[in-house]
Image 1 (spheres, rainbow, N blue to C red):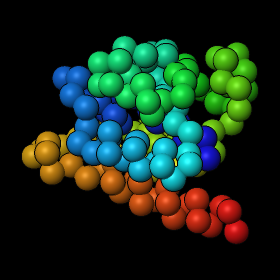
Image 2 (cartoon, one colour):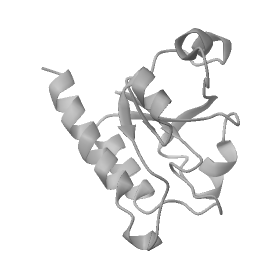
Image 3 (spheres, rainbow, N blue to C red):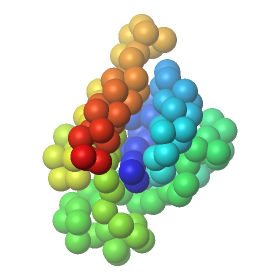
Length: 130
């Protein structure tokens, strides 16, 4: 599956810390055969990929459509409709389907949202291939 992850408040915190579990979940998703992309309303976030050494996991980065979601994919250079999204904005998850996450809370190191998203992706992938 082509899985799109939002960046701010999904993968990184307001103070630019990588959410717990991201690298391990990305490892697992890639091992499971999925292709991972980042997208953001602030544009392609390659600086996040580089800062947290996610290059081996992330195939590409794109602008995220914040309105007219499907119609704007082509305009923003997104070559296909995501199979699954992980985002902290309910509207994006409603439009494309996926997992809604909450921003990392406290205590920070106990945050399990990426592992919850992984479990939901595995479950979705199992039913989507049948």
